[in-house]
Image (tube, rainbow, N blue to C red; front, side, top):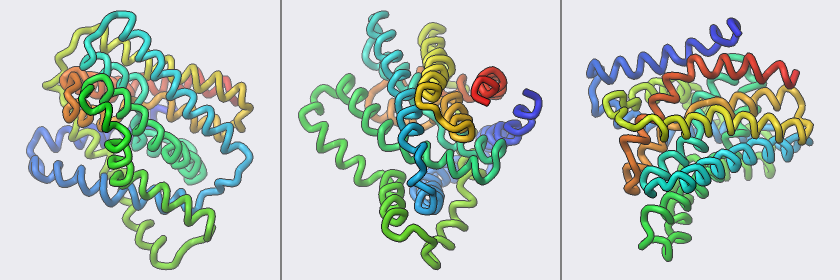
Length: 310
């Protein structure tokens, strides 16, 4: 556990630095807004294209890996939907709990995989991102819009298609898959450029994760926070553990799947809640609490779960 903690501590120190810089006004609030756009539109798409286009997608374990990762996401989603309906939560609150249960922070997962397992772990982790980004974007948007924007339900397919075709992460993943299958090798200049830009994605993104934490907006009752925490930190990992066992995942792939299962909810959840009329203060509290507690929950979870799959 100590080795795991020392491996992931740099990640959370970078996140803490991002929070401290934003609160200190360094360089400025405008910088962090522009930085988010740089990461979203340029750096992360370059990273995903560069790695996915060269990934060994023909591996026999890829199907089992996708079932494990996506299955864990779906189980966590069902938990969020079921518990909020059982407790009679209003749609705005329910959708924020749902996002807190099922969405994930890919950036922390990628950084952890690289720190703990090196380049090979990073390459396996980027495939998890490729699987989860399209699925989570479609399903979460469908449930949030159908709950909060009932007047948009008739136009929901068009809205989803519009969102997908302008999402740079999904576009980069699709192009990468095409290059992977049709070329299967480095493309001069293209891979050089995306490799250089992609190399800066994780440190800058981790700073942005910290800068986007909203401690002042952590105004929420205990139960919704606890439900989201249980869904993300207990239900999701246990579902991945069970599905990985049933699918007979190789240990190296299984370890990365577990890492993805225990990372906190992604900060993009707050943006979606705010844009579509969800409970944004609750979403801010869920994201912030899970991210802050992850320095404890991740080493503990990995110390308990990883020995079970070795």
